[in-house]
Length: 617
Ligand code: G6P
Image (cartoon, rainbow, N blue to C red; front, side, top):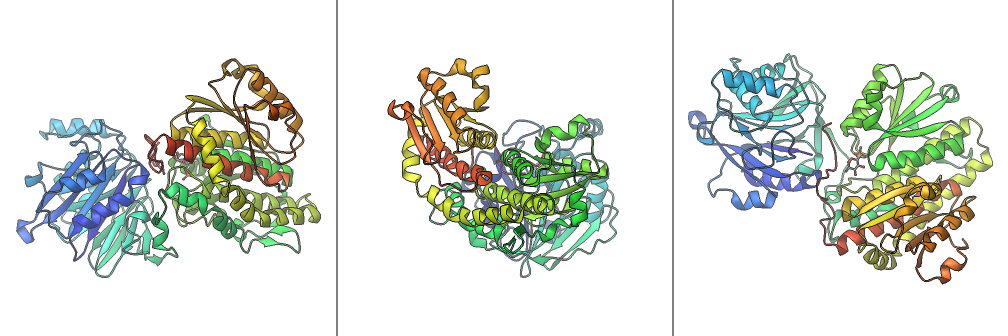
């Protein structure tokens, strides 16, 4: 999704903005641009450079003379109007040399058509097809005598979501930013200030930040920042120092962030478990849940909401909650939930799961539940993010920054977060202390076992090379294995661009078997559990149609004459407690997807058409 970065200070803004935009590339975008305030005093002018394509194309095209110590930059993900040079941000109120205002904007202005019409009637010539351009004109036409006032007035006229940053030639010492639905943070440096939609853009300069809330406006000069409500009364926000290592935002010696993040999984898994396992009582301690045992006992249902991979891991989480806590649980795509006028029950525990904590569909689902009086907890990775702040309590995932679009370590920690939650809920209810201890021992073994799966990378890479040749694949599993298959198919399709479809193994014969042939491989999830024999029977049906098979399984599962038939490849993962199987079965699927995409020569961290955080509906 679109990215914003802004700078005000003593340094040249353009290089900082361009570097910041490079750090936002993973969010997904199709054009990029920067604007700086050049000159000084009454001769201040706006310079703009923007174009469709990559940030490096923009950097190469920057004019030699592009000096200025205040500026804003943007990566655009097209919504209103195609991705071209004109529609790229920043947008101005006039052609660059006459412009007084430049605006960058994330989000969508819902009443843009009406506002464009009104401006055109008033004689304004709009240059682009975008909703954002109206903001530049509204700010320029405001009669308020401060930039904060002009921005506030402009915002009062618009409906929709936004994170914006605005510069104005009459106020050359500042940037004014505002948020409603699209994340924005302010970074505090040494006599310099930053604004960005994502910490990644500014983390090399500062980790002292303030998160803007919806409805807030911020004014930044080189020496400080002030925050206001939209009516310009003060919110007096102060900055805090985040405990993050800027180096974790670099791929270092790794060829991609996805590979780096896959390899970080054992360490990330240890972090989410650390200090949360209670051997003595066979339970988990989740301080952030904010729930009394009495309240836990009153829960009649658990409803998990997330999008994409977070939704699939939510389905794994629902399985854990049902198995360990014996509470009916299910997961639903947050993007759908809100639109079917959901019944919010007082004795349902709602769980929002999100890596970024900014996914708009998940955030809006949380707001809908809370509006109707429901209780929501969050499983969120990014500390201080919108979903984390909006929930009644939650579990931070401590996976560290995840940059690649395809979620790996955050997903693993989401699973572990659910295991901890299910354990704690279970132990307040019917799970025995012996079972609690059994699971604690299993959880403690997991980081090392993830490492063992990662060590199979070479064999998985060879296998992936063969799978990459197929235009279309199935991923199948049952019960605990089904969400694993869904997540495996998701990973495979999002980075290899092959058609990968997940199915319940049991449903194959009710339709998809018609497609099975030599050209359509199936990746089958067959843990050594109570369904293993039935799973193997289904594999025979695939083999009988000459469908190539990759079986992700445990040692000891008897595939019978399939093993001898030649067309079957086995991927063996370590055994743990059955309830925890899903995550160890998921890790090899990450490596399969990764190596298939690599074989096909794709840009793994920035898959086409996808964004890391989807902050527009
Ligand atoms: C996007 C990403 C997915 C991710 C989903 C949810 O669609 O492309 O990889 O799983 O958003 O993101 P979240 O930050 O809420 O976990």
